[in-house]
Length: 195
Image (cartoon, rainbow, N blue to C red; front, side, top):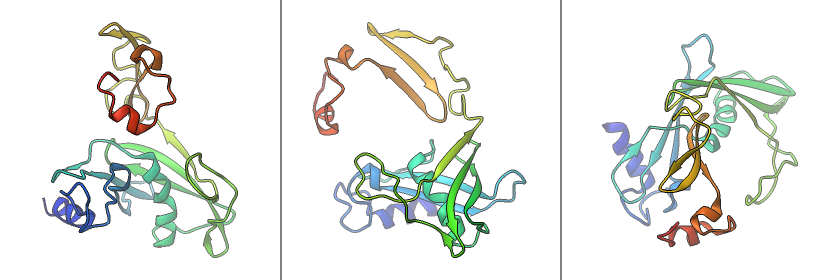
């Protein structure tokens, strides 16, 4: 697919260092939002999320990404896809990956998006205006049900878990059941074959 070839080239994949692209050698920085004005009556813009593989020549369109979704509204306003209203603009977003809708609330002033603000996210330097995301009818968007197994608790290999699909499939379990504390770094977990 031509689109995949373009995204791989822009990111510099496949290369674990992505030195010929802008990918940043990490899955967290190898994400793409493809945005267009929507023809749907219930959405302002359509958003397709693409996860570009760092080391392999593949692009995954299977899920949404909330972090990238937070940028869709400001982008739509900046590019003139959506007219802004002060002090707040609501952008209705159709998430093509899962066929779901979200509404982003974007702080605006007379000139457009108001990026200045005091909201902070742990682990992210600086502050900015908050962008609130409201997910509409996302329960079961990937697996068909909020509780894909039909149960609140399941046991796999002796470990009690809860499986949830509320916008993205997630498995919840106690860290201690894997011999962890819950305070490990990503690198520690990646290097721990038992976890």
